[in-house]
Length: 100
Image 1 (cartoon, one colour):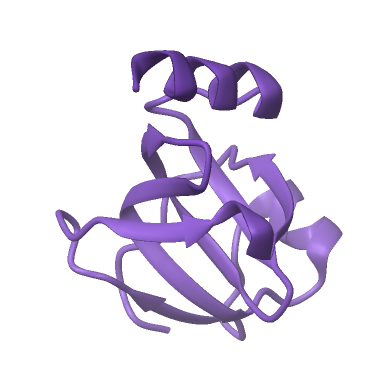
Image 2: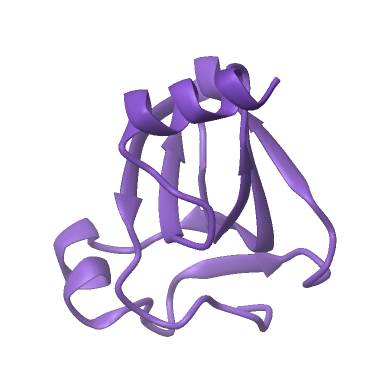
């Protein structure tokens, strides 16, 4: 099991504790990586992002007032299937914690 986690981490270039913005085929998520497996990324401090606004602006300065953000409870693990992920980027800002 530990070998599988390490392989997923190396393959994806991600690590536990890293804040990320994940783009799936349909929506975006932010969160802090709590676990990596061969099939899932598990996030804590997660939020479902229905609309990021302009992508460049979002990464440059964070979410603006028009972004649509629905945070999960902070300690609730959110599992995202690797097969649904289009892109994972390190998130350079504070993770969103309030509904917008």
